[in-house]
Length: 202
Image 1: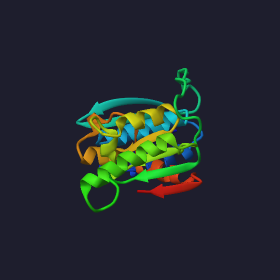
Image 2 (image 1 turned 60 degrees about the horizontal axis):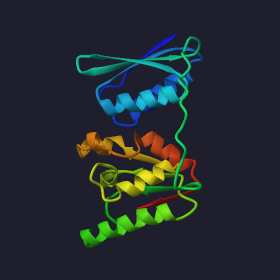
Image 3 (image 1 turned 90 degrees about the vertical axis):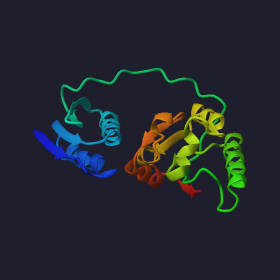
């Protein structure tokens, strides 16, 4: 069975959701999806591979053509040995959503100091959060030159999931400067929030 999806012009996370529904509708077969931006390509690829599907990608007229294979004949992913976590001794089921690079709406310089202190406090507090989700100008905390980058790296090494909104990185034109964690999409953000015991937004 083969399903074709035209994902051009779809906004995040529509291409991923269209792919998810197509894969759920078949026991085995191929889903072909055409997308017109790199963020959609990465999101769909990560979702498909995470669910045991094979993915091949070609480019045509500036678009990305993804061929997703589900079922028999899909090669098993290569197993890698994870690095030993350091610094953080355990994680909770709390998820933090950080939507700006400062805390509060008054003095920006003070807000930056408060944010640095907050991220450091997360590093020192046990158990650590399950995940930190960065959106809007919050993604500026995860790029090169961020004043909290060393703390975020230690949190990541300790098992805290750190994810930055791909649409936000793209809009602010800083995607190439991402220095810690991974790129995510709104579907994964909602999924992570839905499965958390507690969600705190800044």
